Image (cartoon, rainbow, N blue to C red; front, side):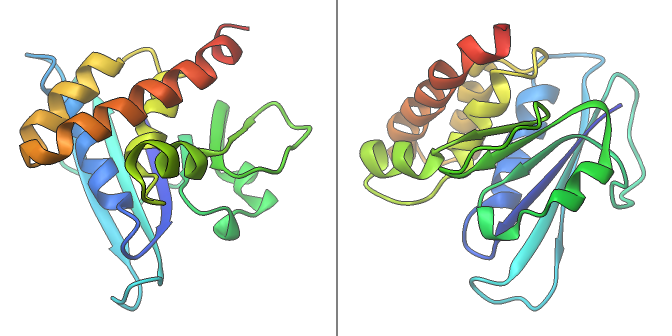
Length: 178
């Protein structure tokens, strides 16, 4: 099972990204199963939230929180702590929306806010981070995510979200191959 933990703030779309990732994986066909679910504290805009995506080739039933993740994705770098490294599985990666850099090769950083601002005219990075994840997670491609967006979002949002996914993938794909 592949487990992805999303960190964001209320209103940033972490749960939406978790759902789209699950859809992108499960729409691949028979034998692809996904669960996505949120964990909220106080339900208000700006409050820290976590969302979870579990992906497997067997049916999934457990909605328990993820203890050790293959990927941890931070939409907001103010939520990041080096302690997160303790919750990664072996060979796990943290994908962090930030302009900061870190020596640890398990921490992948890039400025998702810049991509979102330039393409969408908004600072909403959830789909940007899906594109970033696809650069490192070979079981979900940009095309898979685009298909899921067409199923999960209104048509008026397709073009911009597809563009940020591709931009993020392209920004990180060279580093992923290294």
